[in-house]
Image 1: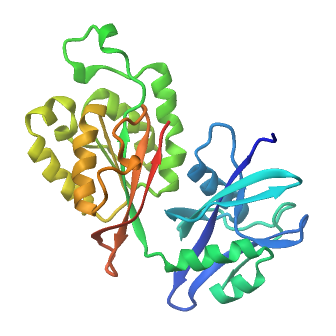
Image 2: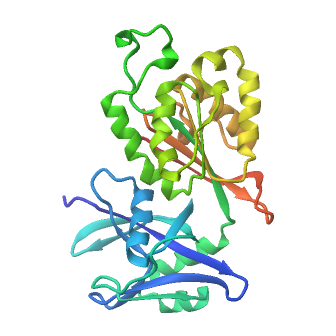
Image 3: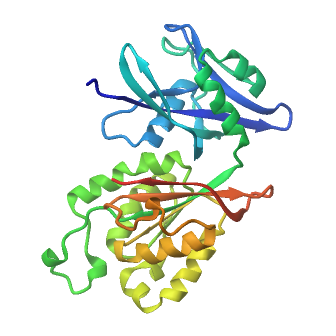
Length: 304
């Protein structure tokens, strides 16, 4: 049986006072078609990172991913292909579009014109679905990457236990995934293994890590109610953020967020057994004023 070709793409949207809502389409001269920005997954790459990278390569735009859209499945030369899509919002930065052999034209046009111009009918429903979604801001709960075993650690305080070499590599590999969701604030348990997990992302952003002592194993055990009150405060912060913590803390964190957002505790997405470097992304709905309103549009899980 032929292996599945994995790819990812974006319904790229921008909104301006002068022109209203517009959607980005790209033209591929080889196929002579109009389509949405998309491309094949690189080995070991998370699909949201693929969507971000391919959009940047094809359009020259930086994008912030919002909620996921329906996966597209079809065959290419007899091989099955799956394409995961997200709604994406044009962000500042990027070199701008430069015509090349793969993409020779790019157009920002109204949704109606975009739906009419798309070559493949399967793409048209994605635009309709994307424009029905409200703007979102992610709250990402991240488990630290691979750390030294407790039995191998010679220090007196477990909070000083470091990442392994593998864990350091895993931390660096998280950057494209966190960047895809537009993470702007980096929060972390003050344990070394958590701080080092998000250090590459903080460096990429040129920002400092915000220590969250309450979400270390030691302090959480003593002050769980205080920590969970703090979690609700973080859930109301409007900017995209990541919170790095520990496996033993996750059950309570997910239970509180499930209640806060009205999600079933039985949802498999909220299984606390995340692998090191795994994360859950809560796509929080924003009010017209740009503040989280206590509702979510989608929840995604990415296990390392």
